[in-house]
Amino acid sequence: MISLLNRLYADYFMPTRLGEYGALLREARDRGYAQITVRSFFRQLVAADGGVPGSAPARILVHRHDIDSDVRTARKMFDLETRHGVSASYYFRLSTLDFGFMREIEAAGGEASYHYEEVADFAKRHRIRCAKLIRQRFPEIRELFVRNFNSIGERLGLQMVTVASHGDFANRRLNVINHELLRDPELRRRCGIECESYDNELLRHFNMYISDRSYPQFYYPMSPFDAIERHERICFLTHPVQWETNWIENTRCNVRRLAEEIAWRA
Figure 1: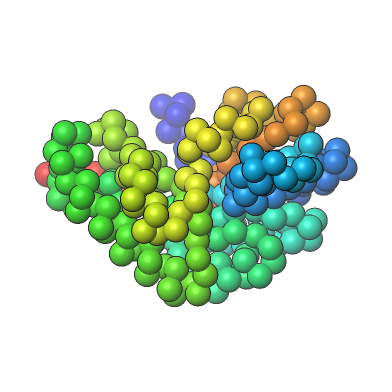
Figure 2 (figure 1 turned 90 degrees about the vertical axis):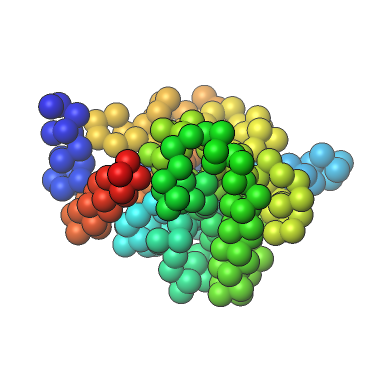
């Protein structure tokens, strides 16, 4: 009952937290953190590995936004970042693609790319509820990923080089993550993908990886305000829906989720 009330509050009544996000951007700037994209950080790591001196600042805060829903709030976060000279990575699902906004992000020095979920989508579409069976269909699912990835890149007019796996209820039920698709080096080569946001080769270089959470927890495993000064390399994953209520969008997403789950179980 408490969890349901918390969800209702978070979806429909919670005051905006964007002032808190702006305060974080200022705090990190004042503490000397370079606030950059996943793409920029990964390429700095590659350059450093190749022996290029001074390729990565000592203090780094990588901003990653997964646009599961609520593009409206994502735009507000982008406006705050632009105001403070911050670059961030924005990963869009097929259902949240906004090519005009994505081009704005890239033009401002940020990164706009793909938040993919082909494994979950395929499982729901074909009502597959067995991990073994879904993995047997991976060759088909990889081709679907390539088509989607290339179509987005063509419409965007830019080469995307990092991507981020989306987590869906179907992934949790199957115990199969979308990221498993990107364990195929040939798939990465075909698409020109340099890095997946959950790659160990990326994550091991962070001292602290923080994700936002819904009310009342807000952050896990700790607040980014507490992490600043205590950790030099921080990755901060956020979802716009956790920062400002958008009751129309939240209602649409809740209805869609319920309909998908009913159809998948039918």
